[in-house]
Length: 447
Image 1 (cartoon, one colour):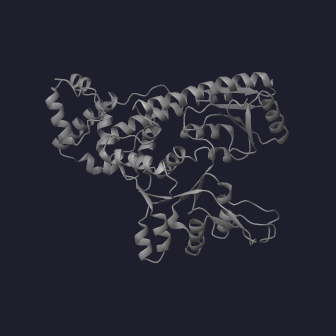
Image 2 (spheres, one colour):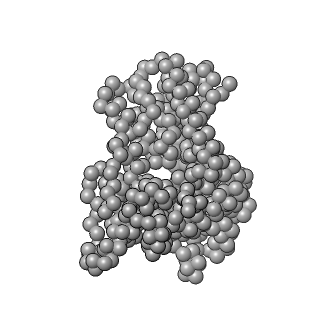
Image 3 (cartoon, one colour):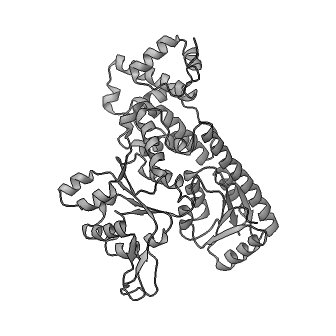
């Protein structure tokens, strides 16, 4: 009986094959990979297995893979394997959050024991998340897209509604707001969660190779095409294709992509045979595509076809009250990622963070959290902020203090007004003055 999914990565074919065979004999469901990159398409919040990776590989090594997996979900068990006796490497891996560290050569039974414990732990994590969602607690989507402002509540509601369908989706938002996070949440909460998630950066693909990369090719289709090759669209069959910054897609390729959207078939370069395609397309854009249409740089029929389901991701400027809560979460994530103990965030720092402008949005805020955890100075405040009037600076400090207290107590009001030494009425008035959301309070029925 299969006990769970095992993703095994090793660049040595013989080692990969023998390890997979040994694990299969113990009833484990093993998928093997020669490199780490494809594994990132198969893991997410709903992944119910374990990742096992050689630590020294060309391209993305095991430590980098560990970091990337933990960025997606810090509770996915990752087991690293090495043929090099390196105590410091093991220590670094443990600090980075690895589940366990195994040295080659290893006994299959020893590794199976580690895997089964990891599977049990992962099963408990997923079951706990499911029970919390049923009980009305924070679910996976809220954990990835936190915030109590109405803009974030509306975003999560719309995301859940669209995820339940198979509709192609357009995600719009400024640089750094988390469009790819929204796309991954759509995939992971859909019926396609067990299938690949293929992210394609339309701005990064070389124009001379973009058709081959997307549609694939037959042998001899062009000089150097020695063997047939699946394109990214075909590789993602059954799953989700993310077209990041679709506004950068060359105009002549947009017509071919429109046909794929409409007919759900592709034709490899050098072939006349149409291949059926079962995928969901998600596109992101930081630019106004209607403006691009007016300028003749984007096809209007493609925009209308993509625009069936649209999600607008708000900038931090549109949800200023969420910044303290979000920063505290990013600090916790950074501390776990870098293996640091809990980092103290002083109220005056929360005040500065909450009152500053963040043109780089969540990405810039995450960088600030990383710098704090690593013991580096935050970026200096703008001159305009330094020259604020005293009353404005006091108000900003007070707002940040209240916001951080609300975040620390999960929106529960009683401990907040008791800690701040003010009455309940005064706290309500100040929250209203500064536009702070009450969030989920357990004090609703208090006299």
